Structure formats: structure tokens, C-alpha cells
Image (cartoon, rainbow over all chains, first blue to last red; front, side, top):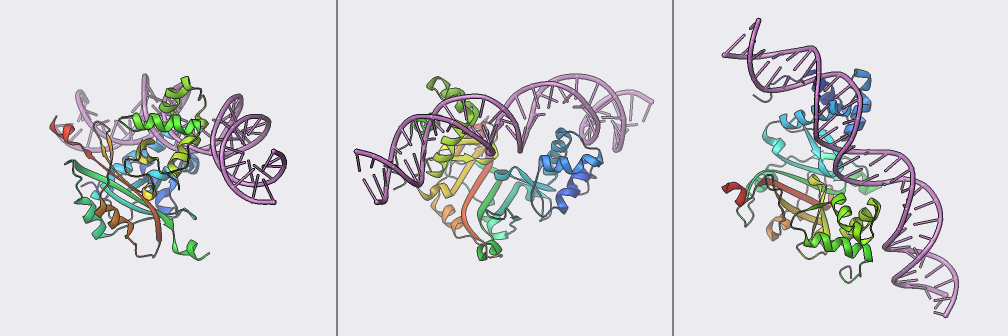
Length: 132
Length: 132
DNA sequence: TAACGTTTGTTATAATATAACATATTTAAG
DNA sequence: CTTAAATATGTTATATTATAACAAACGTTA
């Protein structure tokens, strides 16, 4: 039912901007972009972000402090994220690879710890930056 | 030769504190701890951290903005990190699992992007937090 | 329609990180 | 040696990212 849940006004505004962006957006750049829409304070942005993350609509790219829309199917995938990040052009792509996610979901360390969630970030050069 | 490189005064002080800590340390808590040793400003800490990361002596736990000593062998492993993080007690353990690192090193996405580096963070419950 | 959970608005402030500039120290080449 | 280049330090100021605390409004649903 998580998918069906309707978003609030601020949540919609902010999700919309993130979905339209080509790159990950930072919280304060989102704030700047929505000030004309009446969202004036950082907390308003962070609160919406927090909720959208919980719903699986967006993800945080931890090493960049930036946010991207989920490209998969915003369900439990929010608990199992993988990104490839170009160090030159900063482009971030969400990886959706069944084998990889299966492998990681089933991974166990020797201590017997239970994993509920993971986040994987690859850094490198995208094909177009490699060429130039 | 990276391993042989001798560390500067500040770098030694800061590495020492991180190595002795049981949990990941935040930059400002490091700063607080080294003020008696003459390191007064955030930048002095961040600069040492940056260098130590480059040398593979420490890693940054991205989702926590915190730093841990490398438990492996501070060489190229700094380019291939994996952690398990307990969401209750916050304990962070570096995972060293040949299979996992081999799997990730060889991972390729469909776009043909070249990966030089990755960071993987698992979140869950450690065995002792599971019990209680 | 009352009660509960969620969302909003707002001000203030905490926590994390870097810019810019001046100086000192170390390293390596000539 | 000694001078140039690279690395490290010290310092002040400021940028960036994120949360605390409080009050009010909205939206379910019992």
C-alpha cells in the first residue's frame, strides 16, 4: 500500500523537482528551487525528503549528500540501493541488476549479523567521460 | 611504497586516535580530542583525514560522516570498502571477504562504465543487539 | 465531532566541511 | 650543499548540510 499513499503538497513539489532533474540534487539547491512555491525553510525540504526516502520514491546518495528519484519501482528497493557515479561529470545512475541485488541481499558476514538494508556506490568514469 | 611513507605530526596524532577508538569517530569529536595536543582548527583535522584516506590508513563511513581505521592492509583496499553497521549500537565493522570484493571488483553495469572504486554499507542488527 | 497522527510553518542553532592566505618544513634535483 | 618544488602547518572566516523546539493546521477515521 505504500505506493498508493498520496503525497502531501510539499512532498509532491519536491519529488517533482527531483524527478525532473538529470543529476542528484542537494537539499539546499532544492530549497532554492522551491522558494517561489512557498517553501522557505530547510526543514520543510528535509522533512519532505525524509518521507520520500521512507516511501522509496527517492534515495540519498550518501557520498554526495544528494538525492535522486528511484528508477526502479519504489517498493522495498529503497532498502537495497546501488549507484554508479562518474567522478568526472558527477552523473549518478541507479543500478538495477537482479544478480547483484540477490547476491547482496543474501550476503552474510561471519559474525552472524542480520542485514536489513544496504547501499552500494561505485565510482569511476562513465563512457562519455572516458572518451574525452 | 605508500605504506612506507612516513606520516606528519598531525597525521600521526589523528591516526592514533582513530586506531584506538572502538567506534567510528566524527571529525569534530576528533578535533575536541586533539585540542590538548595543539590542533586547534577543523581544517587541521580535515587535512589530516584527507591524507590518511588517500593512503588507505582510514576510511570514511559515508552514511555516518565518520572515520574508521582500516582493518585490512591499507593498500589498494581503500578503493574497495565494505562495512556492516549496527543501527542500534552504531558499531561499524569493516568487512573483509575475498569473495565479496572479487565479485564487486569485477562487476560491470550495462553501460560499459569503468569502476575504479566502490563503497558498500550494510545496515542491520549486530548479534548482541539482536539478543536484547 | 473528537481524537489521533501527520504535515506545515517558523525561528534558531547545531554539525559538517571548505576557502583563502601566510608561513614553515621536507624532499629531491642540480 | 642549496635552491626549487611539493607537502604540511597555522589561522581566520565562512560555506554547506542538518536538526531542535514549538505552535498551528490538516486529514483521517472511530
